[in-house]
Image (tube, rainbow, N blue to C red; front, side, top):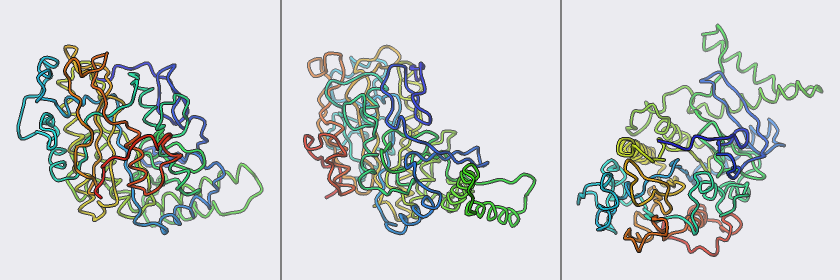
Length: 450
């Protein structure tokens, strides 16, 4: 359950935050929105305020032609602070049963984590366990940062901007795109949501947010013939190219052209059920997470010019109470969805191009509170893909009284900024200086295969 209900909209089109918390990266970015009838879909383009309709259309095409086999990093956020001591239960530590009398995971040798048999996967995480056994999941069992902040919003903000700076307004992936992206391709930084993921927020280049790319389409009232609709849409798009000296008319025509260009660009994924045409069996759910992953696999396969993609996982992980009833199902859907995405990518022959980074703002308190767990510090992060090293990176520090921090929280042994430096340098192959503030102070990690 999510108990942090006092939210305030920090900026139009960005995630809500609690009053008094840091404004999200991207606050103040210009935003232009293009609407279609299909599922009430809204596409928002952030940044790139001088981007013309013609540049929008040409930029996506040029980026697609220039690097059709480019690498893609997918950032998956687990909102609320997942309990790492359940996902990777320290069943081999004597203090575990005392700290978790009601929430402890029963020891099971089959679920033990290779590389650290004192930890074991939650039984609902069997698909992740199997992926790790196949060498496709790199596990970081104790990740965080010094002087941890236990606010959802502040801690998440630190992860999003890539530094311990509450005033940061640029996302760490946005800084990468500012340096190595294109000035006219909004799809290079794609938030699969109706709000912009702050980690993608740039200063110079455009990025986009779209919740359901497969539903982006136009609709004409009382016209049911596809051939007639096609002619109407062609005429609609042509209107965008007509010259005019009227500023308001020019803006309307520009929106028509950009919306039509986007519809054409998304045609390979439009109007189909992404789960039905997937190459792997995604779980059935009312949650959008597995559907969005299936759509993303198709978008990558057809060569859409994506570089960085961000989306929230299923579920809320702020489990102050009712953890025993809510967490297993959320872990199960998360694990099955991520495993299906990896299998889908492999079946499409594009798995070597895609890397998934799974993260949460913090872990949970080591000692249960009776029905759940409170905000903690050190947590868990995963790197998933065919190019992942498949190892355990960073030591688990233990949960004995003298091993926890002063608040009874798991200590971190890996700084999240070391992960960012490694992803920038080893996955994208560029210098992390200027992208991850203070990058030189964080040693690279063996996240990927050499």
